[in-house]
Image 1 (tube, rainbow over the protein chains, first blue to last red):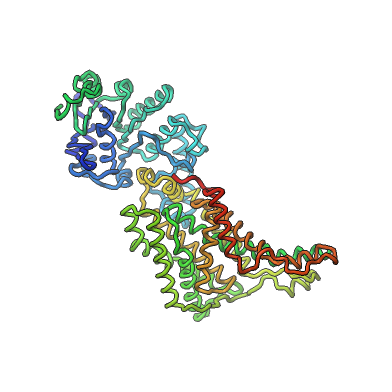
Image 2: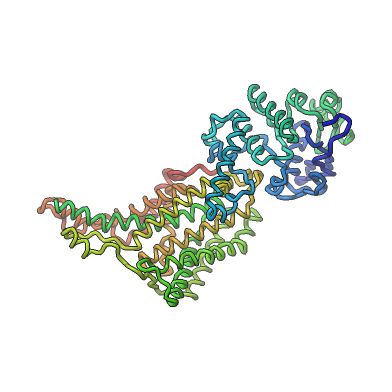
Length: 269
Length: 337
């Protein structure tokens, strides 16, 4: 990508808000994510980061505001529709289909093939088995990319937390996504696995052009990976900019160290 | 030697074959129950009535086909009718879902609510059946009734005890094997099947992984329709169709599904075997069998039945209670989250 031109905006939110009862979990968040970037979302616990992710991914309906993907309004679309548009997310606590094998966890991702339609499965068995082979190869390639081929046929429930995160990442790769939201992908993962996760993220970004947005507490992880960082506190935008600037920003440090009163209401950049 | 062969022929004819046929018919029902529980997450009390309704459609079509002198003798005409009945039954099930269950899914109703709704559907179906075909029994079996008759077997082997094999019994076993095999292929080797299993495993994650919930619901009801038509028709061919006999099947069907673990298709098949053979073994009159095997003086006077046939349904109930006390997740089930 050229240095002079700013890359186009892939995803943008405009004044997104959601309250749970009296609590404003997300309060007028506007944020834009550039095509091909790895951006980070930080903030103290309860800042509304996960809720913002849930709003973007269609898991919650916003009280007000809009989400746009490539300029198209995608607010309140069902998660499976967003998935089809290439917007995917993973979870803080990895979720997996425990009764399916690791390979099946990847191969369950719909891809609009004949085997995916009910009638196709029965009446075009030849084509289905060819597609099935292609799908299996794709899944096996991904497992190889993530270096977890050795657990391909284990039930996913038997994996370690870190391996489950890799499987989640693998499941998103099956869909050839445009943008992936990673919710604390590094939490509770040992250093070695963390390294292979961040390595995978960087390679996916460079080689396959995936855009990533990470929620993360590990500042080192954030500063190594992210071009652009947004800091949230109490449901609002606190600051955004380059990773190094944000991590030395006084308001951000205040928010993290709990002297948060100063930050209240300062929804400025 | 002849005594042993006679004993063997006796239990094969009256215990093993009927047991396998009954287990097969039960398996169709139990698979339906377990699919609905696994994917849609509720105990469908209307399932037996659904099977009865499916059989009713099939009988009406059979009669119409017989009138038009369509026949695939020596096989029963009902086999063709089955294929015509499947789309109709699927429409009825999907229609019911859209009219009722869909609403309760949308408001995230508890499983108990679904259960009560299904009980309501059971009563409505019951009424519909009563109006359309009446409460009396119907015989719709045609074609060759026996593959192996008693007379043929006696002439052929010279044994006193005949091994009899009815067409409906063999059809039940063969079609259950084919349908079971196809179902397992579908669930394990196709994308749609995997999506269904994923949806059953973790509904929210499946939605976030791109699975279209409406499609899953539709496919589930279509599969249930296929299983209901086949199970109902085979049971009807074997034992004669009495509209309300299916209600009595509800308990054994649920017992079979629970023994195997609700939500597990393999469990449903194994559970059906357990329930069918428990019923038969406990109510079988062992007198003749023992008479052949024991020395003449020791032959029993009584019927040597462990339980009278009237208590047949108590057995399913007992199995259900024992499983729920000892291993509530069943043989192949997983702990519910």
